[in-house]
Image 1: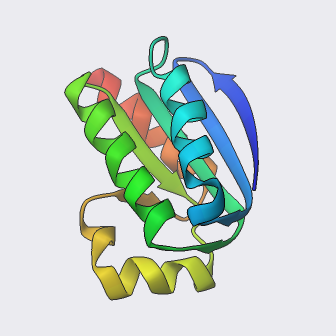
Image 2 (image 1 turned 180 degrees about the vertical axis):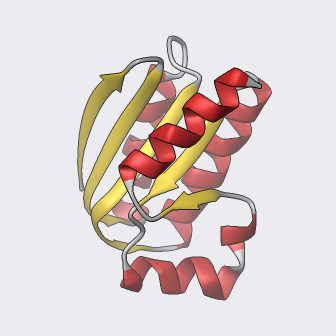
Length: 115
């Protein structure tokens, strides 16, 4: 798994490449949690994420809870077909805002800020 961080306005875009699985989920959690001190709006670009398991899903849920506690927002973009199966089977897609593109997700953050 590889992570790339980009600040776009007040949104931290995190691009996840490869497999988000048990072997790297704790490192992923620690790394992203470290960014939460200065960022409460997170966008995960999952266009290059090839696989996710229950551990990876658990970390995303954990981060969603942390961001919500900060009155922030966490959104997902570009979920690929194979990882989407895990979201569908577990029904966890119900708790995330998932967008087809990074641009659509970024636009939704702007709409949230105008409320």
